[in-house]
Length: 318
Image (tube, rainbow, N blue to C red; front, side, top):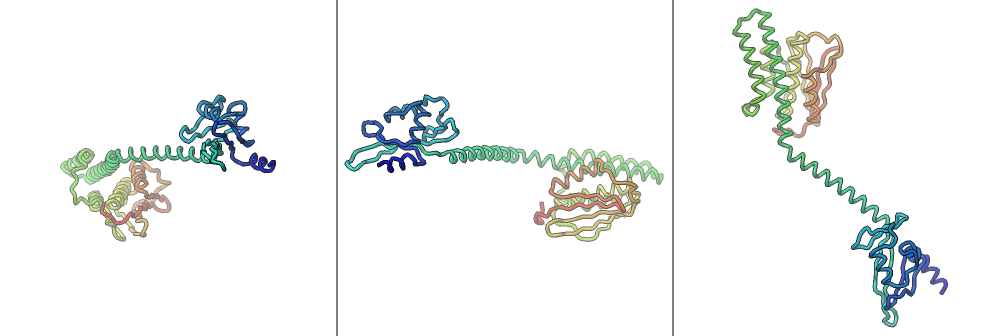
């Protein structure tokens, strides 16, 4: 009998039995320890235990889950109480009460709730991003227009300079001024661009207008997005070639490398005297390239080279 009692006391779970009148008949050591913490003494009846669980006298014991009867005790452990009816040999009815240690489960549930809260927050941010997608796209288009305005204004200044140096007539200079005005207007009428507008052809046309010829080696991509970015790089290179290098030719090397499309741009102008510092045009170009997931590199010595590497996300006509 003592062996049975010793084994009962050493169970990892707290357990006790009450008879049909609610009087305690058998209780193990772990349940007595819990009773002492919960009540400050040993409980004698099932009703006494139920009352203590409904309103713990020890204020350091608090209920975590009322439906599942999970309580947190002062030692940081979480215990789940459960009642169950047991029928004995002679159809005698007993009430079994157990208190299982569910600390690990409670910790995992807390972590799960925190993770769910983080996911809910992420979902809110994704929804906000989705709701603002039109605005984000619009800002991207405005950036593109700003870069085009920067390029066109630079072009008109270079054209005016060329006209003045070659003593061209006043009508030519007025035409260049009109280009400047048109460039400003472009920022406010970006939606009026024709559907068949081609950025590459436009960049070449503007280069020729200021006396710079573009030679390409390789094929341009089909994707409008990639063509637009390469055209931006080409136009910036043309402007800088005329303004800083006094060049007349641009050499564009194009290569499809399956995952990335690369474009390298050099010129026949003067070699830079020192490392090139990115100004507004190059900085804006880098921002646009990197926003698309690409990379941009500038080599100053022993010769100038602008290199862009753009991810190929299928040759969709975006």
